[in-house]
Image 1 (cartoon, rainbow, N blue to C red):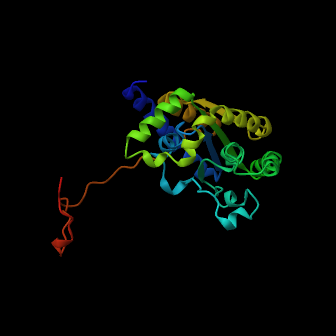
Image 2 (image 1 turned 60 degrees about the vertical axis):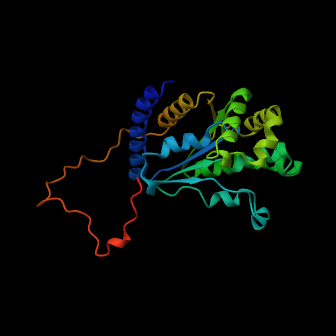
Image 3 (image 1 turned 90 degrees about the horizontal axis):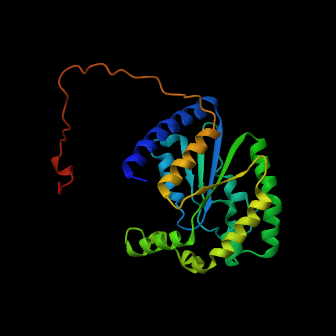
Length: 255
């Protein structure tokens, strides 16, 4: 997809996202969006596209690190509960409690008993969220292995992107099929009427972002809520310049 075409569509969608956020704030509704998918599928880029124009006070991104020693002794879902949205808020999970059904299962970081208990408890946990009034959207970002490998190579070659390549990512490269089987079992157990999964093709990240945002907007009622137009009265007098008593405080202009 050409960049100019992508930017034109994204701009319109982002305007509608602002209207969606306005409606959520006005009505006191809560929106929780879960992003899961293959490594390098584009979860971070999708979240950035969604939040770029939003009021920063009205959304949060939850990207939790691995649990610490204390968290490992808690109920599995406990540390995620603290990040749930309040009235008028949007929370976007860049990976979520589904780590247990994905990376933990495939890489052997949880026991079989813990895995089976998660699959039993997860639908009940999500039912409680939905019954309490949270709108829960769950997206799986799909990418073929050849495209995934190309993105890994780009990250490895770019010093500004190498932080995105974790040791787990590298170890998981040979487990593409295993992740697919774990995904299918996860869908089978957790694709429910109250919290269904939605799969988005992210082999073309631009198209993937646009399709995901369009789908999200179609699922969240927002009736075109906009902020009222503002007319700025003219300033009295000439515009002032920024002046400091101590000129030494200015940062040296290099560019």
